[in-house]
Image 1 (cartoon, rainbow, N blue to C red):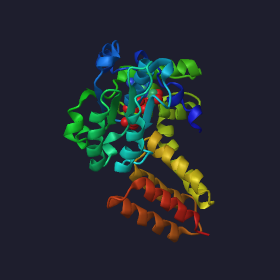
Image 2 (cartoon, rainbow, N blue to C red; image 1 turned 45 degrees about the vertical axis):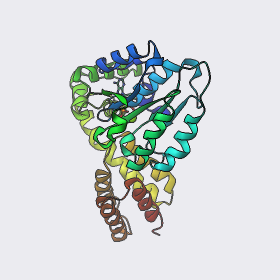
Image 3 (tube, helix red, strand yellow; image 1 turned 135 degrees about the vertical axis):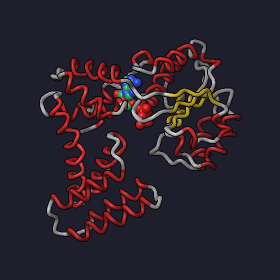
Image 4 (tube, rainbow, N blue to C red; image 1 turned 90 degrees about the vertical axis):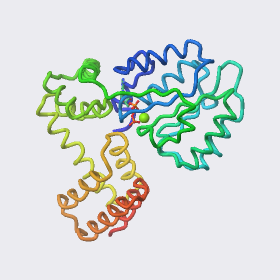
Length: 316
Ligand SMILES: Nc1ncnc2c1ncn2[C@@H]1O[C@H](COP(=O)(O)OP(=O)(O)OP(=O)(O)O)[C@@H](O)[C@H]1O
Ligand SMILES: [Mg+2]
């Protein structure tokens, strides 16, 4: 499925007022941007799929209006490099130039800031000070304790909560109406139970379930198990056929968008090997085991999994 066909993107709020559940956070932010010149740097924290990135983007759009562009907003996320080079190259370069008169300040959104090295964070601290006049930072982190104190102390902090049953189901119902999908109460409740307060996960699961005909408890149960494992089966098939970039893209979608953990991915992959009766059974299993171990001892999992797919593609 392409990103444009995904309901999580189609129904991503574009205004602060459309964001559900985070009422306290949104209320304070709306008050702050009445006169944005006084806005401090911000730090958003909280678990996955609760609206942090969406809120940062809405906020930037509402502050900058039609001046929102690549020149006024720098958005860095996990797919970018996280080291000190990134701070020097991208952040410093972007923040140097004072922007244009129509906007109160330029905005730098550092998504998944807790993945930054401590060297990079220390370097950033200086940049924050030097550019205070014309740049505001929005840091986003799942785990705020990985952000150094000097950065934390320069920000107003906002904690996003997991989303309540009522709000998740409410949002799902809105989407079912717009998509003209049949649903019943038990089906929606089953999605909520799987989602653990993660609205992205809930919407993705609902979209997968809708393709089975409607949102019933039984359909939710089968799609919750099915989507994951059958997609991993596909990744294996694509990798073995030699299409590494395609396999990698699908794998990243499973991990980043659907929130599958790397270890679950490898577990399902291992199962997929047996299901698909591969001629190179033992080689494939050894490749999987090798990368499983490397990830366990702390190597970068995205790099390792990509290398694993490349190695699988070479088995002929
Ligand atoms: N509070 C919310 N209100 C409305 N939609 C939401 C909310 N939270 C999440 N969503 C839906 O889930 C998708 C993902 O949300 P978002 O990217 O903001 O999550 P996040 O908190 O940044 O998660 P992560 O920590 O994984 O980056 C959005 O596109 C939107 O469809
Ligand atoms: Mg995010």
